[in-house]
Amino acid sequence: MKAVRVHAFGGPQVLTYEEVPVPEPGPGDVLIRVHAAALNPPDWYARIGFANIPEDMRPTGLGLPFTPGSDVSGVVAAVGPEVTRWRVGDEVFGMVRFPELNNGGKGYAEYTTSPASHLARKPASVGHVEAAAVPMAGLTAYQFLFDHIGLGEGPDRTVLVNGAAGGVGHFLVQLAKTRGARVIAVASGRHESFLRGLGVDEFLDYTTQPVPDLVRDVDHVIDTVGGPHGYRFLPTVRPGGTISPVFFGEYHREEAARLGITFVGGQVHSDGGQMAELARLIDDGRLRVSVDSVFALPDAAKAHDRAERGHIQGKIVLRVADE
Image (tube, rainbow, N blue to C red; front, side):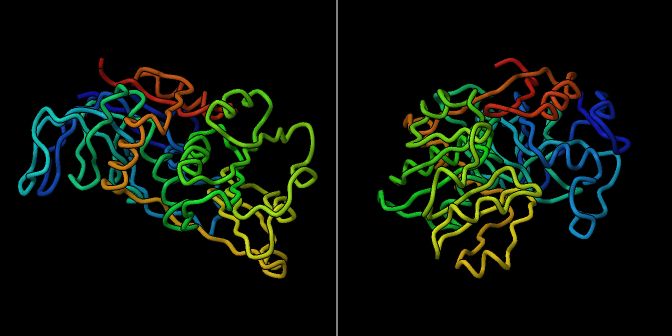
């Protein structure tokens, strides 16, 4: 089969399209004929050897060569021993073996294997490209809102999402709305109509005025951007509120503690049951999937170039096979 592999850490040019053996599904695994695979930040973090992460926090021991990619949508081609849930021909999608490092998803390939429990049935209302755009971003949003923050039903909670037009961000705003929250979206002005179409209650263009000048008493800030100026959101949060960084950043945590602000979050992980819930919301029309751009599998380097240019609206997807 054909796959994209990394033989040396570096820029997008290190992504090599080559022939490798088709993997065999082990006990509890299925073999998937991949139709589409999504790009996620950990794909390019791994490609550069995690050089963008503080040295004392970097994962170690990533072996070369490796095939990136955790998010796939495709068709079950074979089942391993002990698998009863799936049959050959089933359409499935999921985030595979994340956050495992050397035994990760290997999604940039024509075939990959996955634990049966990491998969859900693909939503019937979307194709494989849209389905592949869901897993990591959708699970991150779902787990932050419902597992970590514990967002309940009702209109008495305000959620501010920074980077609201991106992959995780556009799922965050929609999932928060399913619980009736008031949602404030922060992004550049070019994304305003997109985000208002997703139902946000208030849109803030960070390029025209500092966000802390515009909003106060937010219950929950979820920052998908991070970086050295994450602390700028401290004045927006009410005492007793929370900040959830999705990426590394400087948040002046001692000052936050003085203000009564706590930090909640965690590492996203594979979960077939939660994928099934996301699929249900998609098929019910309550969760829309935005695809920024689509590239053929051999053009994975071009897809990574697009990712590095930023200002993404939704997800970047590799098309591996025809629908």
